[in-house]
Structure formats: structure tokens, C-alpha cells
Amino acid sequence: MPKYKHLFFDLDHTLWDFDANAKETLAELYSIFGLNERIGIAFENFYPKYLFHNEILWDRYHKGQISSEELKWKRMWRTMLDFKIADEPLARDMSSKFLEILPTKKLLFPHTIEILEYLTEKNYMLHLITNGFEKTQWSKLNNSGLNGYFKEVITSEGSNSLKPKKEIFDFALLKAMATLPESIMIGDNQHADIQGAIDAGLDTVFVNHINAMPETKPTYTITHLKELEQIF
Image (cartoon, rainbow, N blue to C red; front, side, top):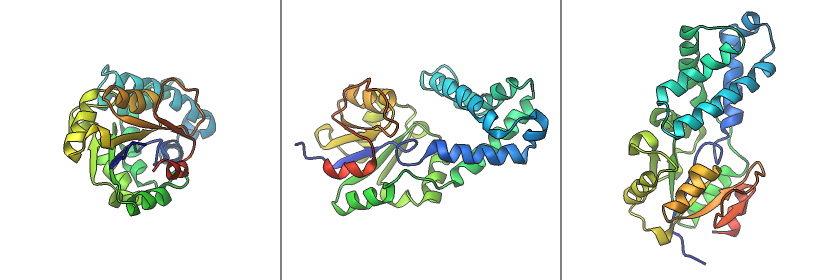
């Protein structure tokens, strides 16, 4: 078995439960902006529309087709359009408030702290590679208590690249002073985390929280974080 020293984690959807935290945040926005009265439907009917547009725009952002600023407000704007509300200032206000509240949320996947403690005690060097925005990701880390576990935090903004591009993985290895044979990427996204890392020459752990159909060939696959104890 390879002797790993540097473990590179993804953050959102791998350690920090983005979906649960985002839903909680959007529910607050729904109340703050009085959308229940304005739209006339319950939040539970609004939320799937947001998820639909958010996924499409994130995919476009990953492919370099839109900017981060467009992603931030257009996911709100496009959702509101589904309810016949063409209000760009409202969409921008919602986006700003969303990014203000979201990073304060603290919901993590089961065993997150436990496994980070375990790996730290075994003297692994832990790092993050995330496509999130610099300020937002640091807020998440600080508010959820994850900030003390990682030696290097590489964001798409900080590296001027983003997963699955090889450049962000090369940048991360350089910053961590790590070599390929002693490094491994751990993430949930088969395209950005797993195939991107494979293309960069890294071994990989696919964290398959949602039992997705395999589309890549990771070095290891797990369904919950505690299974990392069987690898490391």
C-alpha cells in the first residue's frame, strides 16, 4: 500500500454539508425577504427550483462559461423568474445576504471531526482544495471549527484556477511541498475532485455520500468518512 503523507480534502459536500447548510440559509432568506407572501407558495416548493438553477450555473462556472459574480446572483434571479418575478436588485440583495449567512452555518457530515482528529493524531498533513470563494470558505472553516486541522487551504480564487484543471492540483502540491507518490485527493465530485486529481497524477478517494453511480475509477471508494480509517 502506498505510504501517503499529504491528504488533500475537498470541503463542500465532502466535509461541510453544503446542501443542508444552504437549505437552512435559503429558508431564512425566504422569511427575511417576505417571499412566502410575494410568491404565494411554501419554501419547500421554492427550494427545488433553486437547486435546479444552482446546479446548471455551477456547471457553467466550472467550465469557465460564466464568472463567479454571475453565478452568485443569477441563481437567485433565474429562480425568481420561474415565479414571474423579474427583479434583478432583489436577486442581488438575496445573493449578498445568502453569502453573508451561509458561511455561519455549522452542519458537517457524520464523523467529520472524529476522522480529522484521527488523521491528525496519525501525523498526516491535511490540506484543502476547494472551488469555493476565498472569503466564504474561510468563514465556513472558522465557524464550523474546521480551521485548525488544515495546513494549506487552496481555493480557486487563491490559485487562479479551479478543479478539475491540473493547474490547481499542481499549485496545491507546490504550496504543500508534497510529491505525487505521497499525496492523495479525497472528495465527493467525480468530475472535479476525482477525475481532475487522476489527470493530475494523484491517487484518489471518492467519498460517495449519496451512492452515486460510478463514472470514474478512483483508487478507493467510501460511503461515509469513518471508512477512511480503513485506508489510513
